[in-house]
Length: 216
Image (cartoon, rainbow, N blue to C red; front, side):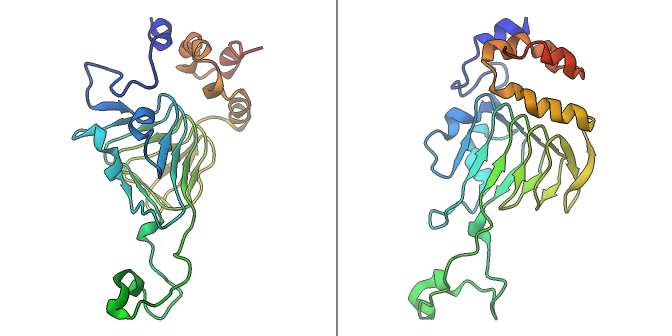
């Protein structure tokens, strides 16, 4: 039964499904990474090396104060990329060439603070589709879906489905009242035993049925 399986599933298990080694839980994989983190049960699937998720986080340089933060119960597909600010160039100068990184070769000019739009925050229960790209400074709301091949350059509302380049809201997963109710329920913060009990309701489209499992 789904409930008993969920109750015994440790979010610190790197490979939660022995029959599917292409899936890893991100929390244990990233626990010692200063530039990225993930919440309980968020997973990454890769057709190549799922333990090499770090290579999907681009330009994560120590000299810039930014991070990738992924919430709980997120699904990240093969090829999804998260671009931090180390790849930025100055767009408000006479040249976009990064002379300072070459040190004294060009006199070591002081450019001032490096362009930094902020880190990337992925909410809870988010699905990031195959080959999607999320750019610096973006916050993806809870329950959102990023469609395959999308390029996301601006914040994503909760429970929106984003598609295209640049990514735009194609539609919302739920009616407005249901979105408000889901954000209020915040099921991802419930005790895992309660989530296990509610797993059947979570696989349906009846918010009222899910609300019956909310902790009192």
